[in-house]
Image (cartoon, rainbow, N blue to C red):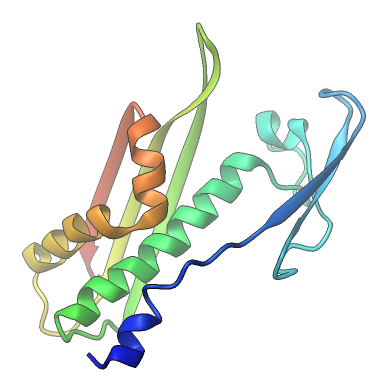
Length: 158
């Protein structure tokens, strides 16, 4: 790896988003905008959070799931790249669960379902790569200490 390509992984990177909320919790609503504008005044609401009724709005747990799915897939691609392996496809699905506890609402469970098409790779090799990725994925490392339960399923589709 050249020093130029090595440096692109050593930068300090800051991303941002903003939320604009109006009203009380039950009837209120908000708009979330990401710095990249991938989300631009996208609606979110408490009702979407608890009853799945509003198909146009999002919620914090869905955004966490999207962040973890995208980060883990990129980190797994990097793990494989370090082994000189190029996957045909990596597919990561994440479920984030919000539970009401005695201490109030808490995001305490995550389920990752990871599948990959990687020619010449075995199930055991993919499981090892996923274990390495758990140690290196920044969003996973951020979330893991606060979770009570993390379930990960790994499947190779060749």
